[in-house]
Image 1 (cartoon, rainbow, N blue to C red):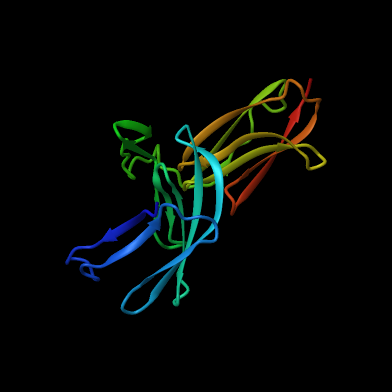
Image 2: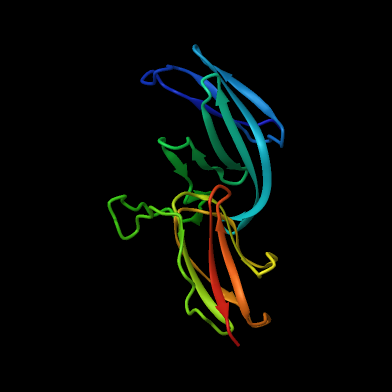
Length: 210
């Protein structure tokens, strides 16, 4: 069945009583549509899809690219289960992220509102810390933080550049995280761990001694 997310605006908006197709629920890779406004047209296209775990539930991510004649570039991530996950208007514009929601009485993620003035919880960096302990024997902990909801991958590589462990491979809201690397079945040596959100990457070195 064809189902669309439709946005309607009241008379207080600069396009009064405007109605637009915000998103097509059944959209597939390669699908396109458009919204026509008095001065311009916005073009929408599904540029990628991926399977992942969101709020503990397996779901299909659909990556939406939006542009117009003024070379606007906007990216959104949608799912059938949770709707809009992320809305990135580019540098200098706002970014919306879904940290949690309640659907049919079921809580997913975190719906607690945190003040942006709470400096202890405010994340301003895309960063990863040196693992600890280092050097280590059998296991070590890695702390990292991300400043916007993204598809995050944190993997460990050997000196040949081969991935030997994927520690994180999922969409995560902005925040501070920690994960443990278990190296019980890996020989001593120098290894690298790489954090990436699809646009930026950080690589650190660690030493395993047994």
